Image 1: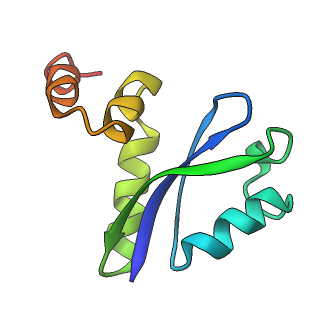
Image 2: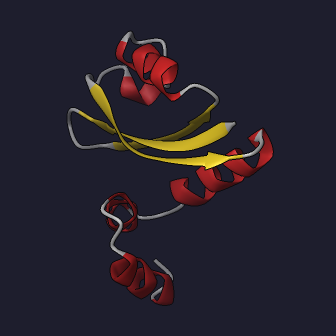
Image 3: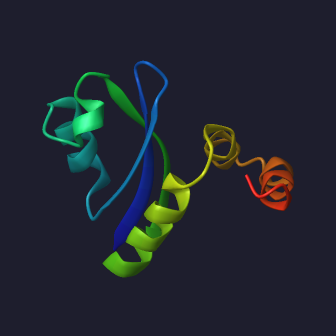
Amino acid sequence: MWYAYILQCADGLLYTGSTTDIDRRVKEHNAKKGGGCTRGRLPVKLVHKEPYPNRSEAQKREAQIKGWSCQKKLALISKNKTKLKQLAKSRD
């Protein structure tokens, strides 16, 4: 099982990635062994995850989310389907 995930950094930055082991990956980020942009923004916490059956699908979703605005990511995290639909219509 693969996962697309979103971390929230101490400064509010939202980092998106993919992995097979969420717990291990969050620990790696917090140990400064994760993505470069999280190293100076510790600690990070997991705020969203989605399971996928394979690496390809998880990475496609990761890429999709990375292209979104912060506002749209926050709507996803809060499970605000109405806001997500509004943002999709405005091509945000």
